[in-house]
Length: 277
Image (cartoon, rainbow, N blue to C red):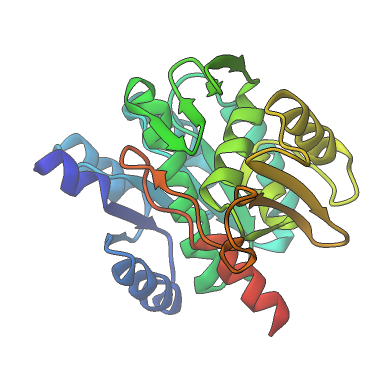
């Protein structure tokens, strides 16, 4: 029980009163328990006293404490969401470079102010999901029709045949299947899956990854799922009804078993609604 509570406890370090109120309220609405600290020293003290956290949300201020802060979080596998001011862009690059890539330990995500409550919720949900997959790969399994995702080996069993995907392809494919029938915005996909790299919106990296997934998993016309491009917006995985099903049933959602994965399926919907508004 204590471990489960710790997984939903979010440390907020260096946030001002407005950020504590706005971001903290959004986190509570998500079912998380935000705990505010004035600086990284107080946070590290809480860690040494045995308090557990599922994520560290830190506003970049005390640059000198960053090496020990990131080292502690990696050792305890606590993902980090780092927020910086626009004037700190160069410093942010230095900090992320010094922290290293996503090898051992939890991931590091970042954003540049202004950051609204919506983006905070989006980033926190995704960081928690990715960290759970990292810490418990043996437990990650999900079924979408005839497709079964096995997180431990980054394998998708498609019609009885094992298809091995690259790590980024596996994460992207999982997001697409979890959100079947929903448009995933291009910017959201880039921000969610390439948090450790500078990927321009016009880059073909995402398109190549999508093309590889479409080919490897046979997500084309005539299959149970079809991966389509929405020009200028992003990608949508559509569940195609059997020929015998009435046309009115085409948009019916597929039967999905995702008990071992945290729920992040509503995030892209908010993005789409926000864009349309």
